[in-house]
Picture 1: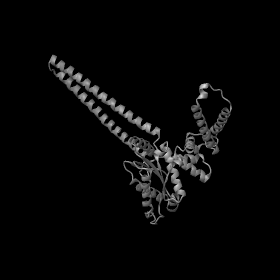
Picture 2: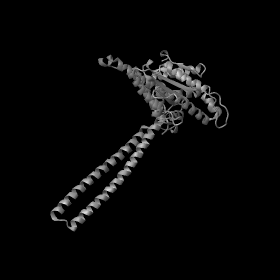
Picture 3: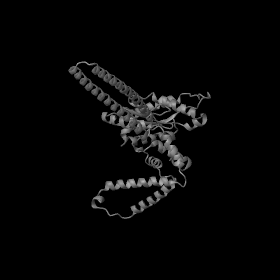
Picture 4: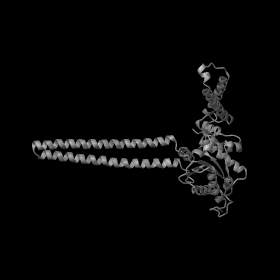
Length: 385
């Protein structure tokens, strides 16, 4: 049941109270001296990991309790993504809500997760579709085996009849029996073939639907660009390829400036058209070694293999300049819109320990660009990590 639909007297508050008592007991237990073996005492790395996890559990618990959120997988995941920065889109959405309203509610948490993960195919849905394809293929295999067995049986029967005809002479009764057997086998073979054709048709349809679902799970429905999920997979692959080949790898974030003003002045439909236009403009620079995706909201992300951070920044800045010089018109009203611009941040992926750290650095450079006037591109430095 969605968190927003839980009754105030339902299981949520009970879990919350249980969670508070559990957290208190954990904190008390942590404060008490615990006898350890020499091996445990000497395993500093393991102890630090336990302490790190305990601290993270405490932070997540404190976040949930501070906002009086029900203890659900959805709320726990949102809190974890926000506090650790595992999901930049979730982190930004939560930060924006906290800045605007000061607190997160169950309903708001559900909305944030729904908006930023609506394009993802759930594991259960994907598993069900794969299982159905496998069942269909198993059925086809069974039909094939049945057809082979029937053909084998038919062959054996024909050989037996032929032997009898040879031994006894071709009597009308034997010939009639042979003809009847042949007709029966032909009818059975046709029935099996029809079933196989229908099964193959259903399997091809299922496979096509499955491929469509997989593409939909990795594509932004508005701009047609890959989505955040697809980009993160590409980032992992390109990082390995670039590292193995000794190539440079740069990542960039772009965020449309004052996008809320566009929506307020011209409506969300016009805002969607602006997103599609910017997505199309950015897509022009994509290629075998340049990948562009919509990261969420009005933000886009780009990956450049074989480009130094300075070279990647120039490509992004050239696109920024191109957009800023265009005169866009609201198709619905015919009214000229204010110049649409974006700000950008670029980082060298290999200047950081992990690709995710480079993403965060590019994101911080993007916000510095916004703080210093917008409509500009900044390069991140390791010092900002």
